[in-house]
Length: 396
Ligand code: PLP
Image (cartoon, rainbow, N blue to C red):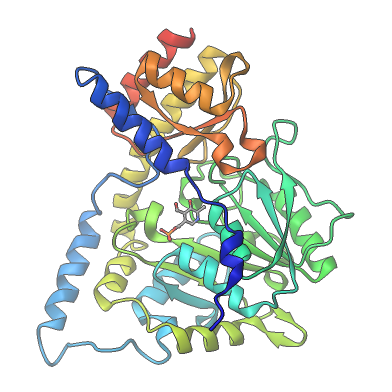
């Protein structure tokens, strides 16, 4: 027996473990201090009432023979009718028409972003931005693929553009981005779509944070861009949209027009999913179907607005302090430049000691993250306001 030796090429990630242990050590040494975490990457608001009601009703269905559900309908990867219709409706409101067999229900974006790689040969070259959500890198290292990086820097506003000199087969785009919070406009995304169509590449478009976009000029789906249906797969999630990080539900769009080597990728994905995945639970799907109803969208918007107002507060604090940052306006992430030329970890230690505020060092997301720092809007409004007061006192 031989192991997959590609796993040995993975770098250990100490980022969140080190952040956690430094926080714990400081709090232990200074129990009287109230340390505020602006490093939270998980949602903290409870599920919307209409989601809870829908899930209660679904549990009741399971209690009676007449309404009981076993395995999902048809091929399990497509999900229940009411959920599919609500996702179609959400796309229609963005001006995007989808058909049934283009929408695949998943247990979240992370699994699908990884599992989709089953469709592609290990010979393909992968392009990821730097800094990056580490899952894109690690999953491709596990599969033994060559990775090239697109530099996201202060100069390009952390939104790298395609380079005709670089040849890539699989391209990851995350917009609004984790960790930088930067979001592509239509012109930027069109450039990537045109590049992918010209080169026969496939874009894996991570739209996990699309519901944070407030600016109507920014696209919320890559399919709002002409030509995207022949080159892009879109990954969406109820995690940050509706607080489903623990419940687990997402959806992936593989357009019927998307073919490579004469093979429709939706057909391959359906085959892969129906072989290796048995669908998302009925209760979860019914909860998710409630999200894009009229009541659902209104209730979910209240939670989003809570986080958005935290993000605006952090962004306006940095504006007042004259510190460069991206994100915060259409994203729960604020990516700030470390003041005084400090490295990411120097700033982490200084902020913890002097202001008792914790964030995430940007260098943990890639070499271009050095000298930057990620703050998030997922904390409580009170803690966020207090952290902003401390930032102003320390940096003003
Ligand atoms: N994509 C990005 C960029 C994320 O930041 C996250 C979670 O933090 C995910 C995907 C994972 O989403 P899910 O909870 O749907 O698996």
